[in-house]
Length: 135
Image 1 (cartoon, rainbow, N blue to C red):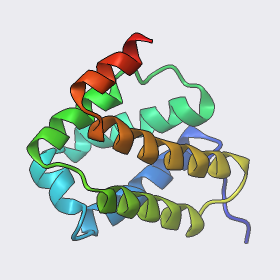
Image 2 (cartoon, helix red, strand yellow; image 1 turned 60 degrees about the horizontal axis):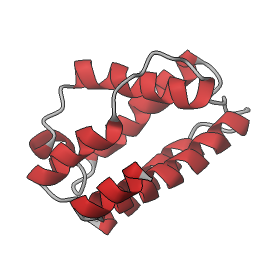
Image 3 (tube, rainbow, N blue to C red; image 1 turned 180 degrees about the horizontal axis):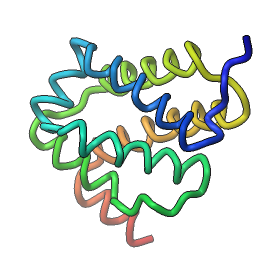
């Protein structure tokens, strides 16, 4: 049986829901999402679905600044390189476990870049972030 692609809002929602089931069951990442970020799933999941619809389908519904949101959480509980590796591993495992196609591959590439950019942005001293932003 062919696996669906992330080419519709419904498939993106199914992916995000499965991914968050894994994240929140993971002993390394659960404390970040529950304790440090204090996410409220009924509020958070629609936002994450909207983010991935924007990234994959060009849907304009997501308008939040993800870096600033993650800086707040990072201030409460600093993210480690292992956290980013684990996040990406769970993302990839969720894709591999149920989705395939060009949109899924785009999501895989985007997630790799997002993890690397987020890690670099959070590790950079404030002066470096400001210098990069001002260029």
